[in-house]
Image (cartoon, rainbow, N blue to C red; front, side, top):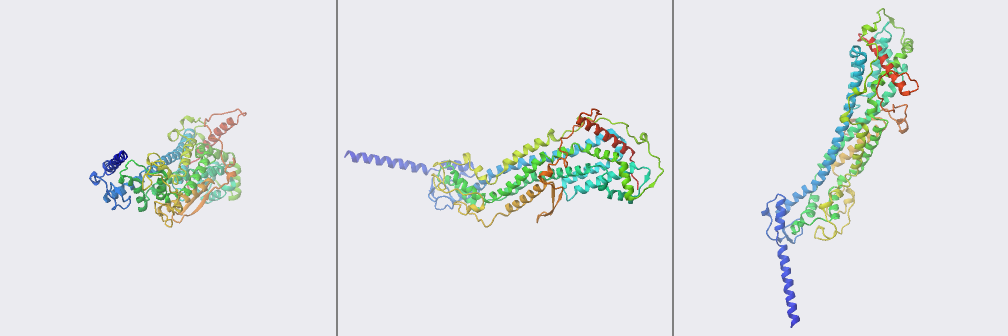
Length: 552
């Protein structure tokens, strides 16, 4: 009898507890609160659970969701799916937009500073006679800027430099032979023999190699930096497929429908959904990484033999070196020209005096303190060190997006997580990255035979830029006549690894400190260089002082 009473009491307790649990589970108050926090109408949510036979995505048992709620939450899941990816993409865009601006500003300011340095030095040293002939050098820097802005399709560097030296030779040749009269035809003959005459010594050859490789590298690198945010922006416009949105809805909001608003998806469940949704983006990874590797290789060139800063900073002294070579060899050059082009007609015009020319008569030291600072007081090494860290960090960005999204508070571990149907451990195998690996994705239907057109186009763009970067690494510039078909021509001063590091081809010493003072101690190589610089500029001043505007 006692046993029967005890059994009855236990049965009653179980029934009461079960009733309490069922009553609690049918209460949708927590769902109402969570649903309204998303900005939806709280009245959409039933007060108590209903049968979910009407639902299209979530489990059709007890449910706090109506069909209207499911549709609204599906739209919300699209936004929730996009938000973390957009945030990561936006951060990447911002990072490289800033780096592109830093490098672009730096290169432009180096050009401006180099021109100003040459101008200030020559004005102080040669006065009015330099001003009368400054357009030759102004045009030189103008063409360098045009090349940096528009590339080889606008300015062919080799041709521009050849024309600069030919024009300089013509002016110098006239002034060192003022006792003769030269026709246009005669001067054309002189220009044709510039290469054989080598009136400026080896400076034009070295400077051509150095300028070409430094400018090709600098311009291509900035184009690469500008491409990164552009690619990220275009890839970010790729919308989620209906199957992806459905899977995201089931992962993020079906727990709401079961009354478990705090339940997070299992991590591996999240990974499978995200890898299915981002399958096309993951296929960018191979070309993306190839592109970043090429950027890193070119960055090393910018630190070494293709250092733009080391080229532009001492360019005024190098041009003066060339003028000095012409002065020192003027008699030999003139004799060779007379032999090849004929004896010119003498003129009885009196030679101008030094006093009348406006030449100041002696060299004035140029203080390095007067040199303008570069962009934001930075330098090439600092910029390159910073951007290399960012480039390395950006590698595998697309393939690791699922892992980057499915972390922290967005997911849960073990058995205490949502596996798509209930609060339990997730048992399915995690898929690999990329389109081809989604054939058996249990949550997202992916047609692996139809890759996304936008992303395929960006893969092609990355391949093209990688080719440009590799060419620039060897000192060559690729100009694409038709960007659509990718056909193009390659130009520049190519080199392999050994020749690119050849000291004979590069002025590989650090930029000289320009303290131009007379120096007589032959025991110091730096003193000889400073004395040579003073002589160079003094002789150049004499040349320019004698030079009058040419009239043909």
